[in-house]
Length: 261
Image (cartoon, rainbow, N blue to C red; front, side):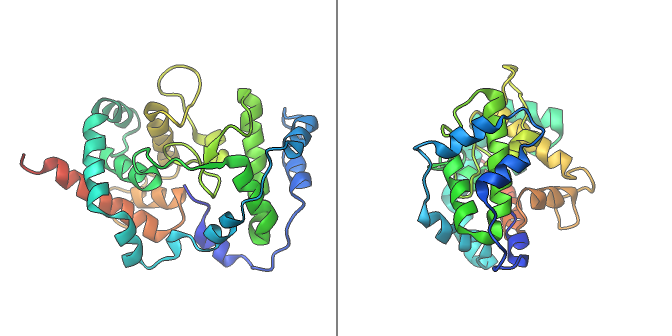
């Protein structure tokens, strides 16, 4: 899950940066998270700026032409990996699909693109990725500050170290690469341990399915551009390239699984 590229492109590059700390304090006003918890996080010695994130955020893969993007993601290795993923996780995929109604091969395609079936989960401390964006990319400062607030809301509620969570350069984490705000809104516990853990497949796949359903997955049948599935995927990441490559990968995985042995 990536912050909406199209939305950011529409915003002025001259948009003023916000005061990150004060913006986070304001966003958490009225929540159980105390100001002292926020102050301690910002004063933590682990806070760090990653300048390479600025470069990456300004040149996301979604800005490529579709042929470039397709060549990057729709590879033989990823197609074969998707078939292997479906075979290895047949039981949990079936259980999640039965509950939410989301196509199994679409789920495989999505996690194939988002984390390469769990292999690429990200290397950055999520707090620091978001802090870097808030401090170094003015037009995205307000968005990143709100995501920091959501991260602190999450860590405070779950009694987790706010610096323990690793994710992408954009601040997304888990097998399905949720932003903190999406975790707080859509993450679900599927394995019954009372904790939605996006680093295990039952909870990750169920949370992805929940997100897609809540974003119109069933609003229209099929997988074309007018379908609910297309609309829901676009809600997950506001990029036509992203949606189209997932749906193409879905089809290739399905073909591979149905091919004669």
